[in-house]
Image 1 (tube, rainbow, N blue to C red):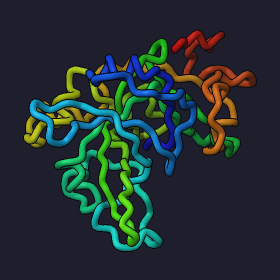
Image 2: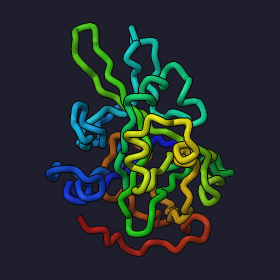
Image 3: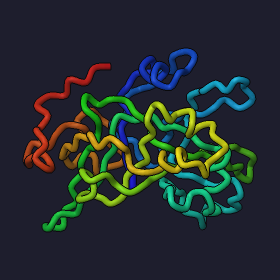
Length: 244
């Protein structure tokens, strides 16, 4: 499951990480939520050899064959176990694979008190990484093209399981090309890519209540909670020294 995430890195950092030509203008985002637009990396169609480009897509996949969105729930996640054959995803899985740049994602855990506590999950220093994603293009009755995406999920690594049993598929940099370009999705290497991240080095930080609002997108979303201890005995981050 992934319902919110952050993107803090600059356009220059994103261009370097994903081998883009030119530096896209990217503003820091502290609480990216479904129905909002966010950057994604795809192979620029028609380029030989394949070149990558950054595009803006709306989070919440609408399959291209959809006739009436009023009766269709936009899909923010796609389970890796069923993505290859589920009608809503199989076409995008074949020809619409993308990388979604991120510096961390949120998960919520229901406490004994009934309260839902948010945690920010990230790598040391808010290192830039990528989720596996899929996208599709849907044409409105008026002819407008809406480009949407979903984040692919898998079973959680051990450090996250007590919060949620699902997490985004995190694609290692060595597998960017495999995810974006491979036509052999039945290969063992490709199957391994869809499993939990091989290096369980996530940092888990309990954050405050402001992130609960999908309309709130400010730096204090990622600040550690001031009223409770950090999750799972992780040391509380005393200051956010992340610099662009």
